[in-house]
Amino acid sequence: MQNNIFSGLFVGQNLITIKQVDSTNNYLKDLLSNSKPVSEGTVIMAESQYAGRGQQQNRWHSEDGKNLTFSILLKPIFLAVTQQFDLTRAVSLGIINALEPHLGAQLKIKWPNDIYFENGKLGGILIENIVQGNQIKSSVIGIGLNINQENFPLDVPNAVSLKQILHRDYDLKLLLSEICKNIEAAYLNLKAGRLEFVRNAYLERLYWLNEHKMFKARGRIFEGLIKEVKDNGLLVVFDGDVASEYNQKEIEFLNKE
Ligand code: BTN
Image (tube, rainbow, N blue to C red; front, side, top):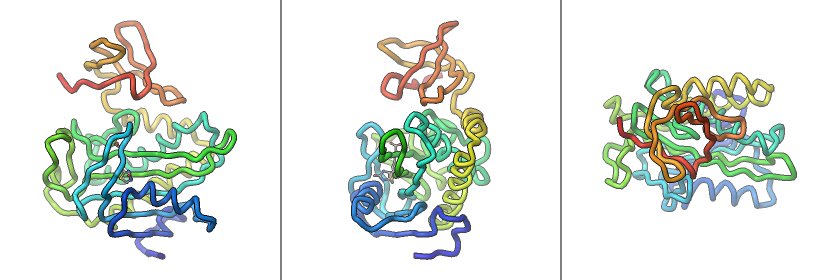
């Protein structure tokens, strides 16, 4: 479906909106496994997901019709599998750049790819890559952002929405078009080989960068300092003079001051 509020070249030009689906990521992956080709930049947006998926086998909860739950198809065949974290960086940055005019500098990326406002989680990203040989053939980028929801279940204590912060309702399609435009711009930077630019811009927006904070990792609680994120996506945290690299399962941010 053509939609003229989408001003980018390809992301969002083919927009499929669905009332209810298990998960937009599943829907897009099923579409890809059918024989008909699916154009790069196709976006599947759902009003309601009954089995929304988050990172690390978690569920993604979202009140029907209130938030953005969508998936974008990208075909980053120019990226090697070892560069897949650059896609995570570009997508996170695109979302940050789209929301920046509304939320300003307190908007951060909590490593690896949560969207944070102050200490609240505004959204998350679930990227599922289809790999062929050493290349990423296609990438299903699932994005959930809390927009107009006012109350969250008690088991997601740090969730926050745009409406809770700014006390007004937002037009979901309009926000989606801004996000698509900015993700496309960041993705085209990757495609043009401007990896360092994307890496630096990601690092500049990193939550807790260079701040002394409490972490739990490998059975220990310690005060650490995030210094960098490796090209492969590992988080580098200093404990005194000793730097260690962690994957997502190994380290927990302890939100205690
Ligand atoms: C996270 O755990 O932070 C990632 C959440 C990703 C949720 C989005 S909602 C649209 C897409 N479909 C899914 O099932 N998950 C992603």
